Length: 364
Image (cartoon, rainbow, N blue to C red; front, side, top):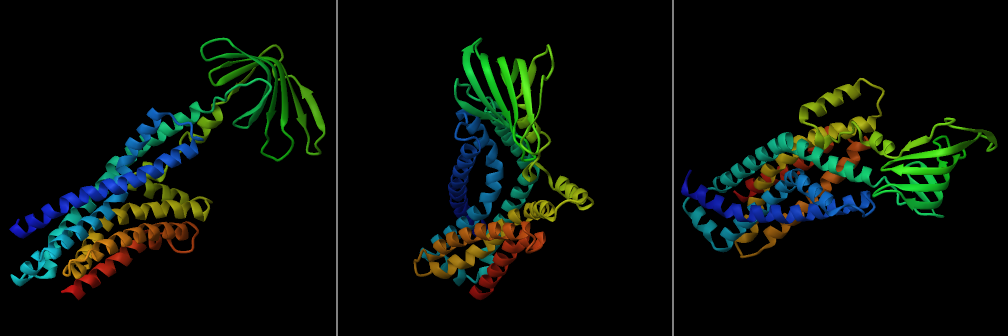
């Protein structure tokens, strides 16, 4: 490795780590909002800390391109303002040669981001989502109050009186339950003289149910299990919702490809296939953006750095925001079938890659 390469690499390390830290903090803030919004702002501090920790690998992959962009722009700007670029060029070194070590760093970061996305991110996302599921299931236990309607899953409860019967259990008297129905008809009405809770499982004695027909008339009144208590597992709906649910971030590339092939052979909606196909292409395009941004930021900053201006850095930051917005816009277009998933997944790389090559050729 030549002296020029080592010198440029040292200039890149600090700004890259700073860029990763800044973008990571911004993304973690959005994760905090998402967790609190999903769990109705009742997430435990320990659970929230676990989610934030396990989200780090995924967020690092998404922050790496902009961190590379910022590091390249800052390093070249600093060398340009101190006229070191002028000295290097006067020694016969071309712009392409100056950009070579920066491109090598971009390629290295792209490879690291790709490997992390394939090896580390699926496991970390599984841990983060498992923590979210555990907190969601724990919150399915409603706070029982007397003479107040309260909700859990598809049930609405009204309890005449409540008495604690243990550390976590309560005894209920004169219970009225509305079970909402999916067909839009009136809820099924359940009454019970006595009840008790065991964690998320409730039992009711002397219970009756009243069923309404589609004309909103009473169809009948029945006992559930004569001589036996009625049992309601309030966690079942939550568990059924989460079980076997895997997000795209929890899958490897081969698993995503397998799911695309499986869905393609079924009567699945085009939107569902588009979403998975889009995530598949983003697995490649997001890491590659590190290399593309390294090629683009260097000549952009070089053009403005000669006069001691920071416009190159500012423009690089603006391009970083444009980059993320381009991805979000393309994802919406791709998910809705306006453009093919392959175009939506690679549009930002093509756009910024062409811009980077143009800037290098022009600066040379």
